[in-house]
Every structure is written in C-alpha cells, then in structure tokens.
Amino acid sequence: MTKKQKKMLYRIIAATVLVIIASFLPVKGYAQLAVFLVPYLVIGYDILKKAGLGIWHKQVFDECFLMAIATVGAFALGEYREGTAVMLFYQIGELFQSYAVGKSRKNIADLMDIRPDSANLLVDGEVEEVDPDDVEIGSLILVKPGEKVPIDGIIREGNATLNTSALTGESLPREVGVGDSVISGCVNMSGVLTIETTKEFGDSTVSKILELVENSSMKKSRSENFITRFAKYYTPAVCGLALGVAVVPPVVRILMGNSPFWGQWVIRALTMLVISCPCALVISIPLSFFGGIGGASAKGILVKGSNYLELLSKTKYLVCDKTGTLTKGVFEVTSYHPVEGVSKEELLETAALCECFSNHPISKSLKAAYGKDIDGERLTEVEEIGGHGVTAKIDGVTCAAGNEKLMKKLGVEIISTDEVGTQIHVVKDGTYQGLLMISDAVKPGAKEAIVNLKRNGVNKVIMLTGDSKKAADAVAKELGVDEVRSELLPADKVTIVEALLAQKDKGECLAFVGDGINDAPVLSRADIGIAMGALGSDAAIEAADIVLMDDDPAKIATAMGISRKTLAIVKQNIWFALIVKFACLALGAVGFVNMWWAIFADVGVMVLAVLNATRTLLYKK
Image (cartoon, rainbow, N blue to C red; front, side, top):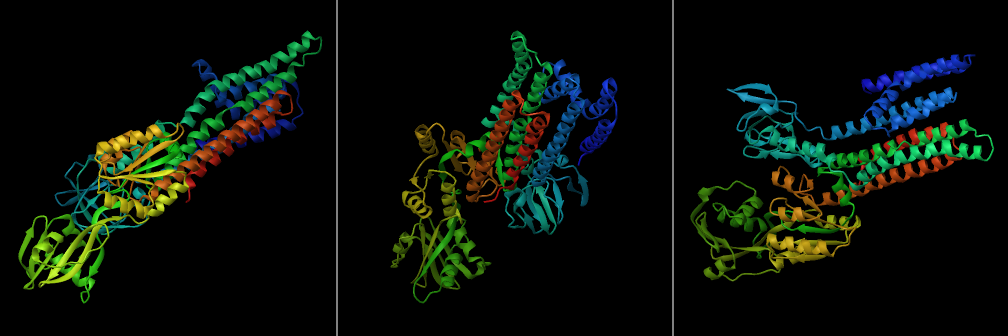
C-alpha cells in the first residue's frame, strides 16, 4: 500500500469513528450540522477542492462535481448522516479502486521487469559500474551470473546459459558462446561474459520493447474511444435529467394545487447524481486493455496499441509467409536413404567430410547434422564443382557428394524419392552409398497452430511464398493450410492481400504474418501486421503492429485468445455498469432507490468492474 493509500485509510477510519460518535450525540439543529460537518470535511475535503477547481477551469461534469453536488445538497436538506455516509463510502470505493489498479499495474511492471539498472564497463582491465545510457558502441561490458544483459552486443569471452523468458515468454534457456549475438533483457544464469556492445542503450532491444509497451496506451481501441465520447455527453445529460426530476414534478404539483414536496424530489435528484458517476466505465475499460497488453507481453507478444488488440479478435483471414514463419527458414537434413550395407552414420559422415570446406548453405546443414569436429587433414584433392557438388579423397579413398548432375557425370546409378527437398547423393570408392534429403523443415507445432487459429475464429488460412510450387504445396498439405500461392515476388504478395481485403466483409479483419523484414510492404498493407521470429530484429519491431518475440507460430493463437478474453471482459464491464446504472436511475427517479443503493450503483459497480478488469492478466490456453 502506497503512502497516499495509507493516508486515505487513516482518513476513512477517523471519519468513520467521528460519524459513529456524531450519530449518538443528543444534538439538533446547527449543533448537529456542526458535528457531522467535521467527519464530512475530514473525508471529503479533496473531492470538494477538485470539484471547485473543475468548475473554475470550466471542466464541470466529472465524478467529483457529482459527488459534491449530491452531498452538499443532502446537507442543505438536513440529511447530514446520509450526506456524510455517501462521501465516506465513495472514498472507500476509491481506495479499493486505487489498490486494485495499483496492484494490476505492479503485476504488469513485474512481468516487464527487464530494464537493467546498471552496466559493468571494462576500462583498462578495471570494472566500473555505470548507467547503461553512458555506454558507447564498441565498449566492452562484463555480465556476471544472475545479472541482466544491459545492452545488445557480441560475446568476446566466455560461455553461459541465458534465460530469455522475459523477452520470449518461454522458459527454455539458450546456450551462448564466443561470437554469438546477445540482446539486452536476457538474464545470465551461468558463467561470466565479456560483451562488445553493438548498439547504444536507447536503441537496444530492451529499450525498444519497454517503449512499445509504455506507448501502447496512446493507440486507443474503438471501445475506449466510445466510452470517452459516451462519458462526455452522458454526464451533462444525467445532470439535466436530475435537475428536471428536482424541479418539474414539484412545479406540476403546484400548478395542480398540491403540496410540492420539494425535499422529496430533490433527494431523488441527488440520489440520481450519485448513481450516474461513469467512473466504472472510464477506469475499467482502459485498465482491461492495459491488462491484456501486459499479459501478452509476459508471453513474448508485444502489442503496439489496444486498437490492434481489439482488431485481433475480429480476424477472419490469416495470411502467412512460409519461410521463417511456418518453416524454420534454415536448411537441415530431414531424412536419410542409405543403400543396403551402409549405415545412416556412415552416409552422413562421408557427405559432411566432402563438404567440410564449402560455405554453401547445404554444406553447412550437412556439417550441422554431423555435429562432430572434422579433421581436415583426412581430406585431399578437394574439388568443388559449381552446380554439381564436391569430390575429394577421404583417407585416400575417392568420394563425392552432390546432386543428380554430378552422379551422371561420374556415371553412377542412383535411387530417387518423392520427398520434397534437395537430394544429396553420396559415392565412396566408386560405389553408390545412398542419398540425404535436405529441406526447410516445418516448425514444430506449426500444424497445431493452424488448428488453434481456426478454433479462435479464423475462417481461412492462406500461405504466400516465393518458393517453388512443389515445395509450397507439400508444406501446405502437411499443415492443413486452406489456400497456397507460390513463386511470388514481394509485390505479388501485396496485390494478393489487397484483393483479399476487398473481398472480406466490413466487420472482418485480415492479419498478415511474416518475418518482418522481407515482408514489410505486406505487413503495412494488412489490417494487422504480425512479425514472426523477431527476436532482436529492429526492422520487424518497426514494421509490425504486433511482434512475437520468438518464432513460435502457436503464439498467434495465444495472442488471439488474449484478445478475445480482453474484449469479453470489456463487454462484461460495459453491460454490467450500464444495466445497473440505468436500472438504479429509473428506480431512483420514482423513489424506490435511496442513497445507500446509489452508493452501490456507483462505488460497488466501479470496484467490481475494476476487479473484473484485472482478470485480463490471467490468460490461460
């Protein structure tokens, strides 16, 4: 509890004690007014001050003005106890609201607690603790176990395990060593790292993430804008209605020759003013979106504004890039087809040794699959034949690894397969050993992600790619994609997305998911641009409306789930507040609701709405 909240608690306790004492004192008239005025001013002086300042600045119609008019009116009619009680319970509600809002903001702040407090700068072999803002590009910093990486950079010394959960939402640690790039916000779990900084602190990943989350409230959703406009017209309208209730019926009674009962109708009007406070809507709706954005951030999903969070719940068309989005975007060995008498390990070793001196992506994938240190002294007479493959002598034995063209050149008969990908055939001492399939593998969980997207309301998933038709069709079939367009240029993707935008209904949204770099034009053109695999990518963070801090396609469905839950809570709060308020306003106008019910209609609804809004932080699949 903050100092301000503690001060309010003491005021509430003091005012409650004074009201109890005043209720039992045998005083009447001005003496009774005086004894109730003391607790009233103790608990309500700040509300009266705010109401006065609002009138002075011509910003009259807010909750402070309504509470001031209602309670001062009650005192004017001699309802001292009710007037003091209304102010007391209003402040109790404000305290609960302040505590709930503060707790939710603290939860969000804890979830995004990735900003480093300092950096260990290496100067002439000595370590100086400095502000991260003071570290220049190219400086060497030391990161010890348990510390956050303060600035993006490249490891020059040391090996460690990094916890990236604050950025990606995933608990799986990452092993790093010399030459690896690291981004700020990760926690060093083991080992001492010496890092050469590649960015200033203000441009580093952690700063950009925090800036996005902090600025997300600037882009309001339609629900928030509606509530702002609604409150602007609603409060003056209710004040006019209350004035009519206070004046019109007594005047009518006078014209009919009856007693006007001014006090009865004024009390009803004051009760309506207490009921009418729109703070439950004005506070809980933005808080719901803030909680949704904070909850998404904790799962490695950055949403740049509540407007995008709202649009995400209306997404019916999801257009995906293939490479790097649904597939890993890197070549790897996906299957082995050795001939009889040759093991998979022997086949791979021969291919990896042949390709060990090549920097071609296929060669790199073979060496990565082999996973062992290669002794270059075992190789002689290495020859790389462009567009064909490599020939070499391994331990004095002539070997070759390459495509079908190389095999024809060598006069070797081969086997084949219908699998989609690049075939690498292997020959050893003139004898065919078999083939390895190399392809851009589908990401684990990509198929399940497509299923979950459709469960979350997506009607059609479309895959766009510049890859060949055969490769694209194979991936689409494996994943269950509804439609696939292949062999496209970036401009073709924009044309297709524009055509889809023209076809969809008015209330539907189209989201495009890409790597955030090559697909920037399409990301900008879609209703919502979602960047995949954007860990540390400045281009992705700038281009997209929503950024997934890892390359897991399942996060798209998670983001949609958070969006739908947030919108559901927003709608619950809107309908609950409006139904209760309008029902109590109607009952108050005819005298069936007194000040105590009015307090519930205002303070009770506000507290319940705020507590409901905090549920947006607790999304589970």
